[in-house]
Length: 69
Image (tube, rainbow, N blue to C red; front, side, top):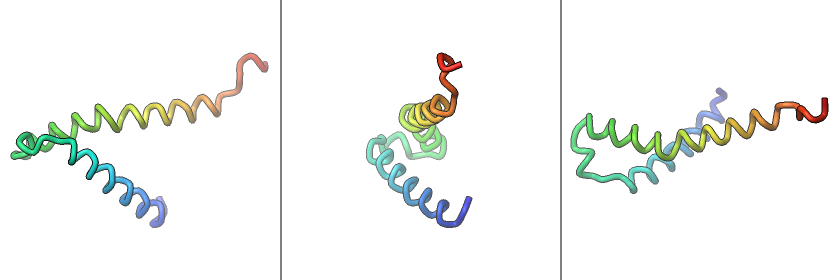
């Protein structure tokens, strides 16, 4: 990854982290275990599905249309 892309990624991740933090229960994040569980839940609920949709759409766009063959 280029330094420019890494900087862009960090900027976006910081923004995402802030959004997810704002939606988290502060009482649940009093321990390292609580922080880990909160992060895991947030990633599974919000981040992973969006990445999956994005990657699936990209894959579908690269696949040749079977009706063309």
